[in-house]
Length: 168
Image (tube, rainbow, N blue to C red; front, top):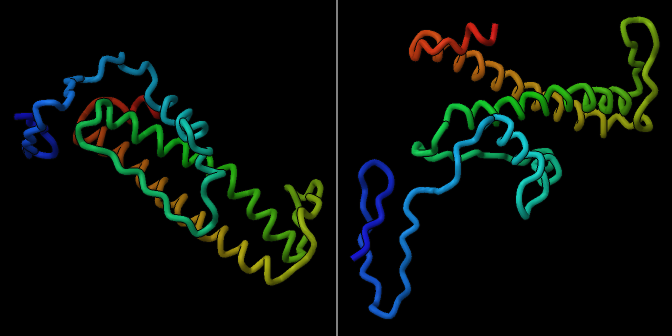
């Protein structure tokens, strides 16, 4: 009889046939990550046997990160994913805004010093769709910033682990 434990105390019992080859690998034998946030960012940028997240998704896709409660260093893994997404959005937002404004045909002045050249030819229909994308990315960015701030406050007031002081 093999017992596989999962979830909150659940057990799956399996009785394999006698001729079945069964191996017990136990706990992972790897070493803990020195920098889990950097490892998450690297995994998102260059996953194994899959294109990077930014090439594998298109506007309108929904991305879900499902994480088991038993993952070691869960806080660091989630923080790494949130930071990677924050930086990706902080890079994408101005570029998508430039694209939308170019398609709309409006000039883009940079601190009244110079104007950016248009990225695409004027096309109001394209501009409307790209502005919608820009707005959706903005909402995702707001949600991530709120989650980030909430997590920092949780660490400070609930866990008392000094993360907020380190951030400031």
